[in-house]
Length: 374
Image (cartoon, rainbow, N blue to C red; front, side, top):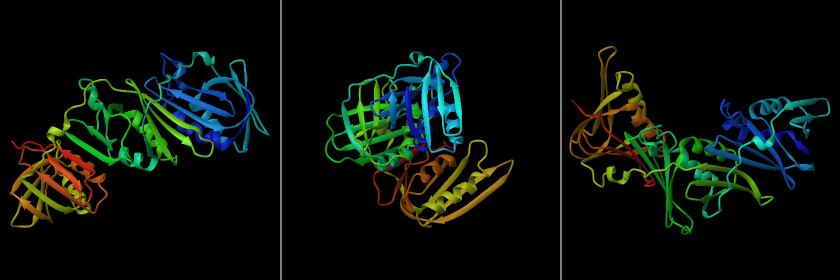
């Protein structure tokens, strides 16, 4: 391999792929990035066996070839270079990096030891703007939690039906669902569970790339591909295995009706919850008291070690009086993902789930289970 490439292009590519290349004592090859030449492009590949990231950029290719070298080390070195142009060439299992003022040799491994990146039959589901996909995933990513007993709730659920995409996350105590209308009906209705770490990598990439992402599906894997609009060639691909299992029938816990509904200013509600949380004790409990005649929400918390706190906020109320306790952290998490200045909070007794919704936007629903009163 022998190529010439702009430093900033190489730097940008390494920043995209190197995050999943971590030290692995059992499989040391996983800490490497595979550099290979494809026609007029340099391709970078990294994998942790669950997720693989591939990145392409135009380069001056003098000799085809490939080599695998430590990803984090190589990224750190490139970041420190001052020159705009870099020459790279392979020599045995080493990479020789040359600029106008320096020559560096990096010890690599046999590229044949690098894990094979799986290929899937490209069955396109949908094409969606990076901006829209980033917005969806950012509202769901923090909800799931790792579970060995129920691995299906460790990931994020995607459901494509007709002209709708629903993305869902839950940790069994809370749940978030984001719905968007697609441009035209999809070619095939599918659903799958994507690992949370793969979604984090996808969010990182989407925040840096313009344009659109094409999603391809296979029974065991999913591929997200960003196309370079100037070259019509792949720019970034994220390939991930899917989590096996059936996602919980979450629709059953989203109440179709409510006993009590309030509308409240989001920022005021969030700030008062944070204050009450200081007195929430070990289980982060805050008590909400709603009396329709008062047009106020009472937020109360008490801890034997710290003291107690009581505050009131003006609200619009429909329905029955209620006294219910929640984990304040869960409510704040939902409020942070709502963009509107006011929120709807629907309640169903002291044991039923609470549902947060943006005012004027039916696309996002956040559900939190209450703390049962003793």
